[in-house]
Length: 204
Image 1 (cartoon, rainbow, N blue to C red):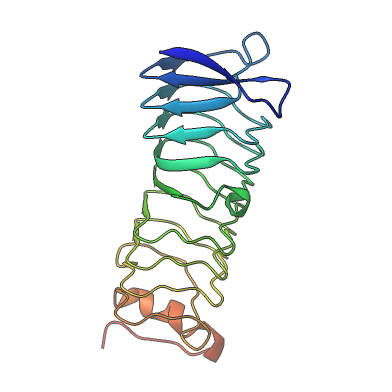
Image 2: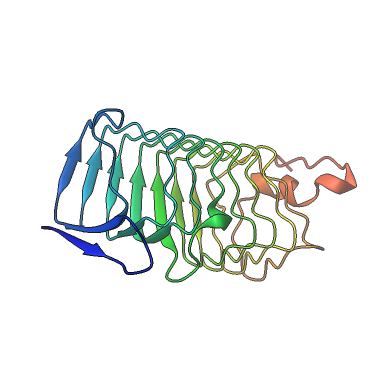
């Protein structure tokens, strides 16, 4: 369903689109119109460098899409699922804070930032999270399943009840992060002791 809602304080139309599927759209030919998208699916779309300022996505799915370096200024992402997407260098802290909620599976989020976001119970499955900034982020009760967290930044991060059991290459300082009841594997304990420059022999 598509309707136009012309706001009095704006000179452009704001669209409302519901229950649509967008497959392999060429944004150079058919730009995505600014507005609200609800229960929509986006497949094989290239959104790289796209400006999503003031867009709103509710209960939407993105599959095999490229979001690299796109702009997320005041973008609303509410109950959005990203699967097998390329999402390099995104600044999620610029999103609309209200109702911010998403999940990621098989995504490459390298060099992205979640600085100061409140994203409790977020799921990351089989994701590349190299050099991602999670500082000052609330990740309470989140799940990192089989994720690569090489050089990811955790500082003043809330990680209580967060599950890192199957993830790897993380470095988390317990003295500057809240990790009560967080879950780690025995092999992953070295990631909590990096700053002490010690060696752990898991065989004994």
